[in-house]
Length: 380
Image 1 (cartoon, rainbow, N blue to C red):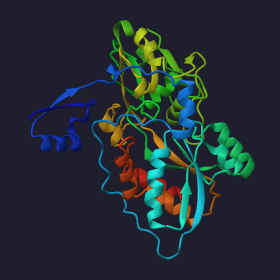
Image 2 (image 1 turned 60 degrees about the horizontal axis):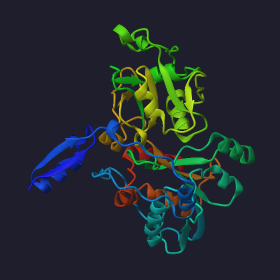
Image 3 (image 1 turned 30 degrees about the vertical axis):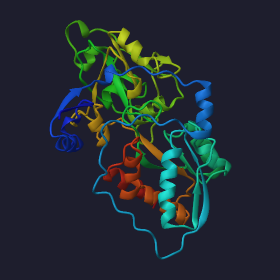
Image 4 (image 1 turned 120 degrees about the vertical axis):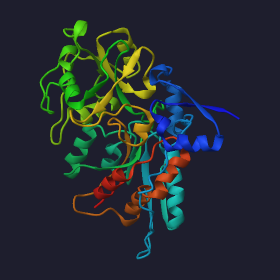
């Protein structure tokens, strides 16, 4: 018997594809492109109302799933003290299902600990709930809104703690898909560095470069050399815009600012279409929003570094630089520990067993061991 498996670019070397091949006996691969994915439509008011009470309807999983990193630590429950307590959390509307799976597994270790994440669920869940004192933690599927952090610090004198606890998704609409930069399909450019993107997008240039306004400054020749770069982006504030601002335009201690001549749109939905219509355009969006007529570029953090494309394999391995993560946000005063039960809940999520639950749900992508190691240091 022969099977055809539809996979994303670059995934053919993955161990999971090999595993499928060994089970099927004979596998042929039909490669798809992100640029061939169908456009998606904005949610309706009815969708939003339903999601507040139930969370978003889960998308169909990718046909392949990554394995849990074998280097992750196994969870070791505490036996030196008895953990008790009742904790209430808030959750983004994409997270109640995964959160409840984590909670059910955690409470088996500690039957006297009760954790809940009741509705309403919201895409704008953040630090405001922590400031009000209504919840003990907030599970958020994006970076916190800067004004939320400002308000939190104004009241308490320090920033909220944001601990990455899971990867996002590859290209699931509304479920924290990876972000990519795209150019028109006729553009010969194949890769860009963060310094080059900073030169294109910002006025601050914290990565040390000069302003870049033409394709010739990026090495293109011939008819492209003197052509202006037309930029498409999402109007601030927006989760996609904030993510690019933090990852590309900003450096430690410095918050980057956008150029004023960017073609800002209200939402991410039309950007792919604008770039497809303009030979000299560049823009960014989540992979779920990429349509026909554009080409995605590989990215590197430096001129001498490796360039990684936004393929499924590189997102799953957390090597692609614009892969996204989910956060556990909490009020943790500097120099103090969290409540022991709450700290153990986070440590369980960051264990091999906790990350396996992400695989069991088959929507989000688990963290790699180096990411988990960083997250655990934030709890200290």
